[in-house]
Length: 245
Image (tube, rainbow, N blue to C red; front, side, top):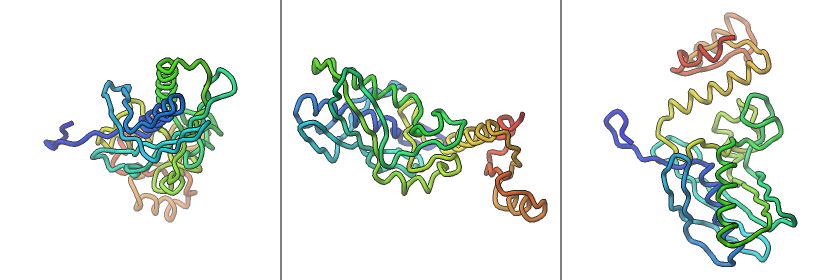
C-alpha cells in the first residue's frame, strides 16, 4: 500500500500463520507426504503461498510451522514461528486449542471469555474452513485434534500490551482480515479501546494521560492509585469516546 507518499509492504497475521500451519500439517498427516509450501486465501481476499518450516512427521501426529511476516509494520512478532500440531481424533469431531506460548485471558472484556486462549474468532473460523477443505480433498471422514503453539510467545508477550490486558502466558492469535497493514497507530487505538472496554466491564474509573509526565502528576500531585492511570500516547482524542460512560 501507499501511505504518506511511501510504498509499504503488507504482512500476514498470526491467525493466518496458524491457519496455514494447521492446513499443511493436516494435509501431510492424511496423505503421508511432505509439503514445502501451503496456499491460504485470507478473509481480505489476498491469496498467500507460504513456506512450511520445521516439519515433524510421525505416524499419528504431524507438526509444522509458518514464519510470521509483519511486512513494514513495526511488529514484535515478525519472524516468529507459529506452530500447528495435528492428530487424528478418536471420534468424528475436530477440536482446536492452544498450547505453549499462546496467552490466555484473565480479565473480562476481550473477544474470548476468561480462561480461554487469547484469540479472536476469525482465525478459528479460518482454521476450521481449511481443515474441512483438506478433509474433503483427502476423503477423510474422521475428526482432527489441533494444537497451536508459539515457543517464543511467552518471552515476546512481555514486549506487547498483553500483560496490561490481562493476557498471560504468551502472545495472541489475532487478525480479522488475515493481512497486516503497516498502520501501527490504528493498531494502538484498537488496543486502547479493548483496554478501556475492560475497565468499563469492571466498573473502574480512569484518568487519561498522554504519557510519563501525566502519570507522574497523577501519582505525585493528585496522590491517586496507579491503576487509575491510562496512557494514550498521541491518541487521547480517540480514547475519549470509548472512555465515556
